[in-house]
Length: 457
Image 1: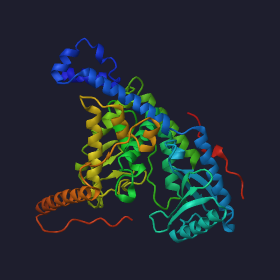
Image 2: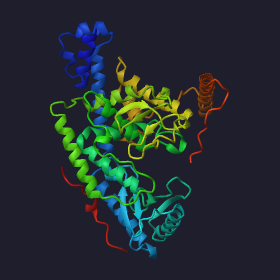
Image 3: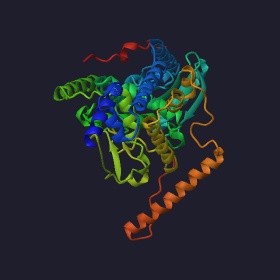
Image 4: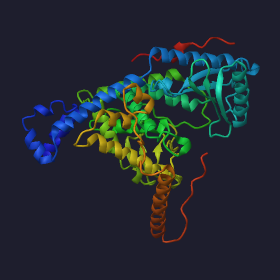
């Protein structure tokens, strides 16, 4: 049986295209209890769907140029604010990492002149963003403006009138710039990583679990889950982050040497490749997607005593003092011990877990999955409609239940689980003390596009 399972695993890695011609197919089917042809067809359908989805969501040169023009709009508006004349406008986030989709937001940091090197106060950041908001509106650049001064990192959000790009502006966001640049270099190691991030983010949007404001996963934590998957598959596709750029950034971190960062990443990536000559993981992207869902389908049972660490590339015991404040801990490899998944609450974690389980079950089903089912699972209605998918009545909940009934059921499940967890904690401590409760969620020179160009390896 072990030999059969090993054979099957090897065939699945290559999309199972050769499985229908396998001389031992009958033996395998009898041993494993399902029709291999049907499973092969299911994977073949998954492969077609993921290619079609990527074709629709991957950005074109025109999408990139729209973002560059949106950045220039910000540059022009910044210089309408007199005292910001020497400020620099730097993109970061998925645009710089080259992990953005056509519909993705644009993150921009306005770097204030700082000859003394002191961190910029939150009050100053709020004042600058307020002035910039007025400048953008005067110029007719922005619509749907949303200024969030009390956020952990104050941010100004709006949609560009001319280019339809959603923009998020922050002040002196050096941590964001460092993370983006390192992830850019990680993305150069294996092209499957970038495609996988786009597919997972699209799936998460389709399942309504990519919304940190409502207690689910942010895009950064989804990216780290993909990174962790690529670090822990056999053989590993990507190295632990500490082997590429070992740094711990603080919120007050100032300017950084970008050339030095590039050089360190290039050298460490070359070292990783030398050490792994002849050990390349040959798994198809479809297989990696299927095993991603399988790996995290029990994410709802992860204890706060353990964390997902892309810094070391392993699941490890959580020794951070604030660990029990969170129901899911995805360590930020650049800002340890920060939790990249800190917005996830227990009620939504159960829904996240169900989304992973549903994806795993549908893709691995021995009866196979039809194209419409896979598209409804993996992409939003907007993307699915471009691929000929038929809308379904309700892709996320039991159609027989109203939204209010569904929410009530989830709440009762959460309260029951929380009651059992409290009783267990009290027995473990030998007291009736309460668990820690998590706090509430809290014109100028033209923009040069070559700032985004990174040195070639």
